[in-house]
Image 1 (cartoon, one colour):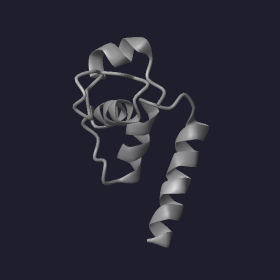
Image 2: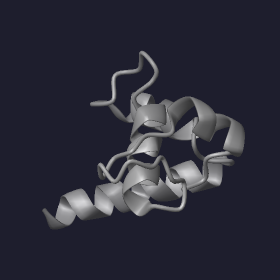
Image 3: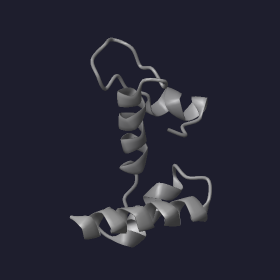
Length: 78
């Protein structure tokens, strides 16, 4: 996950209950990313809100659009 050390200090969590908040642990970092994604007031059920939330994690619009395209592809496979 692409959380800066400063962001990790704010949103870092112990997702797997091992007693450590570890940014190198996939469970901890995935839940921390979820905290960032869900921290705004956007409607995450709608694409505009999803894009806005993704911008909090992604460095570029290209990355956001790639994630949105992948999500659409996965939903289509449903």
